[in-house]
Structure formats: C-alpha cells, structure tokens
Length: 311
Image (tube, rainbow, N blue to C red):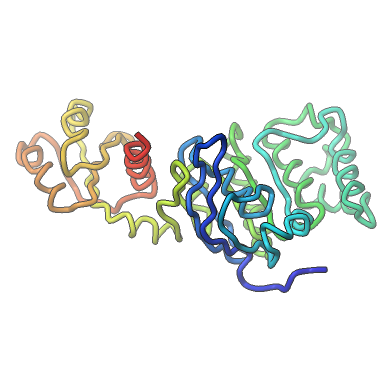
C-alpha cells in the first residue's frame, strides 16, 4: 500500500548515530520537498553517507524520528526501500553483461511486467542506442555512470540516492548526467546527492553542509551564502603568495584562498576584517576590491571552521 502523498518527501528530527562509541551524526533535523535535488556537502568522514542512509530507512538511527515518502524511517523501512534507487560511487552492475542484459536483468529482479521494453525505453532515454550489446566493462566512466543511473531509475523509484556519482567523470559527461537528473526531478523524483564539486552543488535546488556529524548550514545556494555573513575582498597584484602567508590566521580573517590570478580574503566580522587588512590596503602594493562571496568561499570557510571544532 502506498503512503499518502504530500509535498514533503523527507521530514526527520533529532537523528543521532554512533559507531564504536564515536558519534557520526549528531541531532540532525531537516525537511526535503518532493521533486527537489538536495545536495550534501562536507569533508570526507563528516557523516554525509550515514545521514543519507538514515533519511531513507537504510540505517536505523540511535535516536530521533521521522518519515520518508510518508513512511516511518524506524518501523516501515522495508516499504521505503521499495521506492528508493541507490547509485553508489563504485560501479556495481555486471561487468561481463551487455548494457541491454544489465538493464533487462534489473527489470526482472524488480518484477517489472515488461522488462525487455523497459530496458529498450531506458536505452533510448539515456542515449545508449548503438551500445546495447557492448559489455559494461568496455564502457568509459561517463557511459558506465549513465548505465548505472538507468539501472537504478528503471523501477521508477520516488527517491534517488547518489553518493558522489560523478567522481572521475569528465566535465561533458558530468553536465549531461546532471541534465538528466534535472529532467527526472521535474517529473517528481526526489534526489539526495553527496558531492565535493562546487558546480554540482550550485545545480542543486537546496544544499546542506555537514561536518563531523553536525548540520552547519542548509538552504538554497543563495540562502547559504547569505547566512555565512562573509565579507569578501578580491586581491590582485604581484607577490600574492607572500600576502597569503601574511594574512593567513590573522584575527578577523577567516579565509584566504587563491582563485586564479587573485586571492579571496573573507571574514565573518566585517569590522575585524577591515582592521586586519587595513595596513595591507594602505601599502598600495595590491589592488583590493569588494566582491560577493562565492559558494566556494563559504565552503572553504566552513571547512576551516569545522576542522577547528573537530580538533
């Protein structure tokens, strides 16, 4: 029996999970709307994958509660799993089967009424025509990724989990992959994706930054940038590496990072930042201009801060 449809795909409160006495996710609460592409960012080992698995009933939290697709994540996990497609970072289809054979096999496993037709339709949708009889092992990274996406969406799930899906894939294949994800979301599919790529994060409808088990910020990209309260300067000139070393760690300066032929210098307290950079601006050696903080500025600053918290 299907759970009642609502605009909210995932609604959880106070999720906490420990492994071997170490807290991996701490008191996490969030909502995800249906048809949303929701991105999870954060350092390796920060609890992103554990969070995603708890959100959809694949992992039981030590404490906390909530629903996924209208089902209780604790007591109705089996019902949730029937509506979830999971694409792992590692290619997990059969290398010695062809594209067509892999898709038909998945169709039969899920008990689709017409697995051959379903496989043929998916091959057409993903532009895999002409490669039907090619062995999965012979596909490039981008085509393997496309096949894996086809396999996990073949049973028409309501929720799709993507764990760093484009690691090691070229930029063109990544863009095509994301175009397909957006097409699926516009059809009502909810997508949870963990990623390290800023351009991918910017393609998500909403993002959440998790560091060492804690949700530090979430919202649209615009909201996350605004909530950071960062004041950012773009600095150009000769000897920027020397300037970076001089500025790094100064009170009032929360982030210094090279961006192309310039430096981005940011701080959460505008007055303290202005005081810290004042002597360097007055020296006249560099050109300073105020700029809007980018998502990458926010990401780096959050990484620096969360590393300090962890220590």
